[in-house]
Length: 99
Image 1: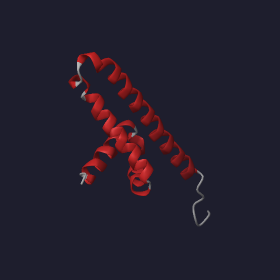
Image 2: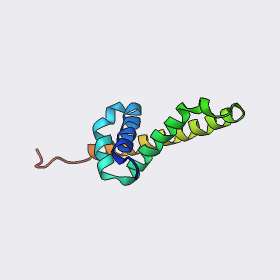
Image 3: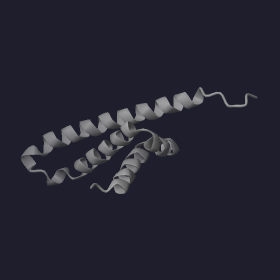
Image 4: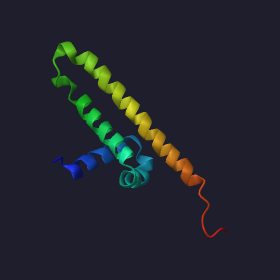
C-alpha cells in the first residue's frame, strides 16, 4: 500500500510552493476533489523526477529533462487554472444573510 499521508503532503507542498497565495484553497481542494489531488500528486512526482535528472544516463539526460520540464510546466498550468477558477467562483458567492 502506498504511503498516502506522505504522498498527500508532498502533493500539497508541491502546489503551495508554486501558489503560496492559495494555500488554504489547496488544502480545501485536496479534501474535496480527487482530481485536484491526483494533479498535485503528479506535479510532486514530476518535480522529483526532474530533480533527479542527473542520475539518468548522459545520453538520455537532455531529452528526459525536456520531457519532465514540459510535464511540470503543464501540471503547474492545470493546478493554477483550477485554483484561479475556484477563486473566481468564491468571489461571486453572495454572503447570507444579505447586507
